[in-house]
Amino acid sequence: MGSRAAEQRQEARQLAARLSAEGVRNVALTWVDNAGIARVKTVPAERLAAAAERGVGMSPVFDVFTSDDAITASDHLGGPDGDLRLFPDLERVTTLAAQPGWAWAPADRYDQLGLPHPACQRQFARRMTERAAAAGLELRMGFETEWVVTRAPAGHPAATGADEPLDYPCTGPAYGMTRVVELSDYLRDVTEALSVQGIDVLQLHPEYAPGQFEVTTAPGDPVRAADDVVLVRETIRAVSVRHGLRASFAPSVVAGQVGNGCHLHLSLYRDGTSLHRTPDAQWSLAPDASAFLGGILAALPALLAIGCPSPASYLRLQPSHWAGVYQCWGVENREAALRLITGAPDDPDGGHAEVKTFDAAANPYLAVGAVLAAGLHGIESATRLPEPQTGDPGVLGVRERARRGIVRLPATLTEAADRLEKSAPLYEAMGEVLHGAVLAVRRAEEAHFAESEDDAIAAATRWRW
Ligand code: GLU
Ligand code: MG
Image (cartoon, rainbow, N blue to C red; front, side):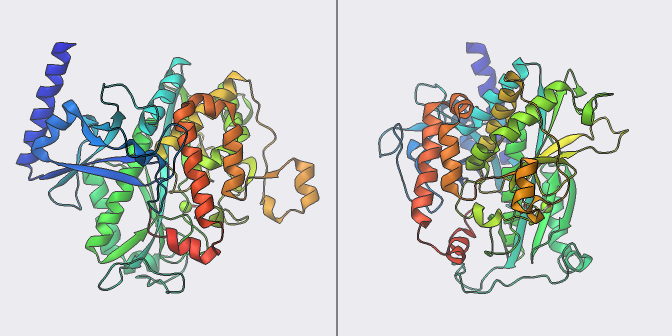
């Protein structure tokens, strides 16, 4: 034990020396709160070893911060007392390409005695990954990042108001090459920064809404996927700033338009073999994969309180917007909340599934952890996938949807939070402290925006994540 600690100390010192030699002055230690905001403490590079040994102090009150920086309280958290320690994950220390002199590391939160903080979202994601491993399952996950880019307002970078038009730096049709040509330096710099930071970019393309783009990155284990999406987002933000631009990852940049999703892709493996490639099985899914996906589908109404955590999320969740607002699944169906992707038949890793409903206001650690918990519960309770749906449920009449058993997912945060409150599997997986803190934040967000018009909600949340 003592020698392991000494070894770690030695590794941390060497890492700090290497960073200093590379010109890194500061290391940003981020963790993501329950409102989905990446909060940070930074330390000088030469303090990294000390931070790795003793952690860096941060109040537990941030567990009940809302996206507008107000503070609420749960049964267990809130108020000025207490302290936690942020421990950087040294394995993930990354020199930041678009912030010269800076490095980044995701942090885990412990109490002052060195015990895991029960509301630490990153450790929740790890616990659920370990729970899957104990059942012989390995999950590979990855988030898609969608964002809208605008010109930064001259002078004071205050939030643009509800009635202030956004100044897009590119024109041209959805998915059109025009946008890539107009922003080619910017988009090249985004990909280059990601790639030198060790993020494997799969694709980048213009999306539907004005100024909207998407980047997808290679899958990894669930905690890695959550770390990656934080790094991807902050990198896009930093490159945008260097180009005089601003990136919005908000679910609804302009109310009524197509929003930004943050879809979660996942695939299941056992002993290194994909459970999406089972010969002779329906949809090529091994029984465990089918039950796991069935568990996610069944839990979706409660999962929305995790994956769509802001009142702004529900501005995005409109039928026929490719956001997946009906509780159904489909093979390659972009209007199903859960989309099964088959991939090329000769690609052993080509099969996976996509939770389309989630957005970037979600804490990605909570998202992967809660999806794992729901999927594992699906296996434990031998959940079966219903029939898949083709086409857009939004264009069907109410009767036809009812006949097919297609239910609308919660259309408000209140409804989703009610479902999370009642979800026994998610309560058990998250534990009372984390579950209670998430619910407290959701209730505070609802109350804050209860009287707001859609435009005002979009404007108030546009630059928060
Ligand atoms: N922007 C859409 C959303 O809100 C998704 C479009 C797509 O399927 O890539 O989730
Ligand atoms: Mg997309």
